Image (spheres, rainbow, N blue to C red):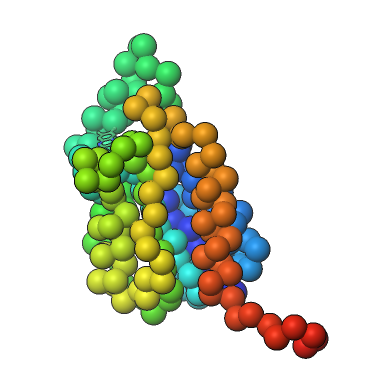
Amino acid sequence: MRAVVVYESMYGNTHLIADAIGTGLGTAFEVSVVPVSHANPAILADADLVVVGGPTHAHGMSRPATRKAAAEAANKPVSPLETEPDALGPGLREWFSSLSQYPAKAAAFDTRIHGPATLTGRASKRVARLLRAHGFDVVAEPESFLVTKQDRLEPQETTRAREWGARLAASLTPSRAPGIQG
Ligand SMILES: Cc1cc2nc3c(=O)[nH]c(=O)nc-3n(C[C@H](O)[C@H](O)[C@H](O)COP(=O)(O)O)c2cc1C
């Protein structure tokens, strides 16, 4: 079985989470982890599971203006942040607008600031809705992974992402009756 993890990331945190989810899924799937700029139809074509996530910007999915603001913040001389190679390229919102219908199973995740989701918003809810609109069978609740106000992952979030990926994989893997070989 094949899984594809598609991520958007400005500062690298969602990229790290996507890699960790990919590691967790690797317990049951052959996994590709790809930035949204490389998530072409050929990569999705025979996937059994597609997991999609990005950063929460302005309470939802990023837009060109929020990505520009994020890049400008990182480019300030005092900023310790660095942007990912494709940071200013098309994001998940634009990717979805050119996506066909897919019958595969799917799940959504995001990164967002640590705090009540009612205040921070969470991009993954919209990602899940867009997955359903494109025919995907969304098999898990959207999940958030948390960053500090300084845009660094909270401790343990990559471990939690790996475990979330492993649980997702297990939930989709037919369990074998004990003692039966083959
Ligand atoms: C322009 C901008 C707007 C943001 N708006 C929100 C927000 O509304 N809610 C939130 O939780 N985090 C917000 N954040 C923080 C991002 O969620 C955080 O930078 C992101 O999760 C880091 O992921 P990345 O390193 O993959 O870009 C915002 C960040 C930027 C740059």
